[in-house]
Image (tube, rainbow, N blue to C red):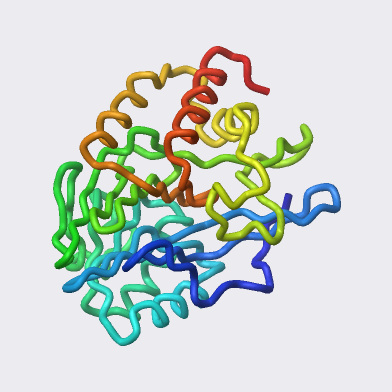
Length: 274
C-alpha cells in the first residue's frame, strides 16, 4: 500500500466529551483496488485554565490539525503539547505547532527532543510517569506506556472525561490484508472517526493479533500478561470510559477491547498469529 494524503478531512474534528476533541486525519492507501484509510490521531483536552494537545499528527495533516485547533480553541491559547514519543505521526508537526503557538511548551519524556529541535530547547519540560498537570477543572496525568513502541513513550489520562490516551497501544485492523499487503491498522472510507461501538462489528482476536504481531514485533517474544495486569490495576484507580489510540478507532467498549487485546497478545506470543 502506498499512503497518500486523502482529499477529504474533517476540519472541525469530533467532540468526544466535554473539553475533549478528537483531531488529526487519515492517510489513504490502495489495497488491491480497494481504498483503505489509516488513522493518525491527535487529541485536544481543554480545561478551565489550560489546554494540552496529545500527539501532533502527521505532517501530511499539518494544515488540518492547525485548522482543527483554531476551531476548538476558539481564541484560547494552546498551553501544552504532549508528543507521546518522537516518531513522525506523534511529533512530526511539533515545529509548526510551536511556531503557531509561541507560549506552548512541550511536555513528556523529552530526553532527546533538543537533538531534533535545538531551536526550541528552552520550551521543553520533562514530565515523568506519575506526574500531572493541572488544567483547572481537570487534571492530566502521565502514565507508563505499558504497551509501547519506543523507550520514552508515555501514556496520558484526562480526569475530566476519564479518557486514557495510549499512543500505539490498542491499535487494531478491521480486515486482515493479503500476504503481499502492508500491515497498518486500516479501515474503510466512511469509518473514519467512529467509536469502536459504531463500527459494523467489533474486531476479532485474529484481526487484533495480526496488527499487534507486525506493528509491535517485540510482542512475539514477550508475555504481556504482567503488562495487562498493570493496565487493569491502573484503570481500577483511574477508570476510563474511553481509550484514545493514535491509530485506530476510539474505544468506548473498554472492557471488551481489553479482553480482545489480551487474547491477541497471547496469540502472538504463543506463535499462533498469522
